[in-house]
Picture 1 (cartoon, rainbow, N blue to C red):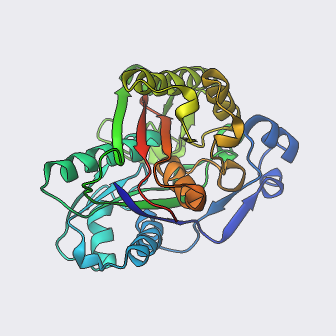
Picture 2: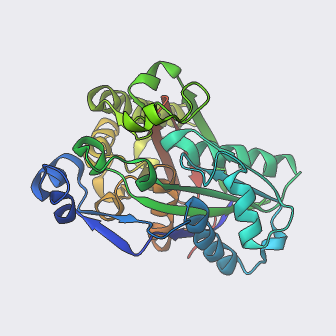
Length: 326
């Protein structure tokens, strides 16, 4: 079960008014199409995803009253690792003072946190690990082209973290998951260069192939179909109704996508956790940041449904029965 939640966003704000000075756009256009008013940007030489993950992890440890050395495992879901290698989880363990804690990075784009959470839960369920830190975070500003108005208005920087521990209480914790991936979507949302297929060269840099590319229409269509269908799979498999969902925590990609998912499911908008207006799309960070901000409204036993969609394509949902009162 999740026993503590933490989050971190950088202090520097990039508002819609700021973007108006960079590209041909305006506040009304951005808010109408995305629901975003501002996003946070991590500034400072040498600062990366691990630095945001570190701050989120510190909050988790403080809430739980444990030391970093008590951790058995760290999984970091990220699309923007500090380096190709070593892993950001490796770097985070060192910065946190967790010693030789076993850990690794997991890359599933915007679905990364759900993939990492489900993976971590299996280690806990097996009995092999008792305190697992799961982080979702991205420094999207490092791969965004601020001359491309189609993508630069969407993304921001941030990280969230949760601690997973075993529980002997029946009906509490991570109850079920439904996860998918289909490489057919890779052409619609990707970063072309920087990997082994297209290593960095002067030509790839000049062609701006180290930035996020997104073809909006097919991504939108797939997201508003994949996310609610995945939620429905979990509901049907566990004999639950939509009204049994206490809180829906969707990936914060675009307010229109969030609304589309909610409308498809027929869920009360007041039960949908949203913070995209403040932070934009932080990719792997959106769901844990929502959990962090909404935690004080969660009650023990609440049915919380997480759902996400990401590049690749990747998508899925996780059903949690919340384990504590804040």
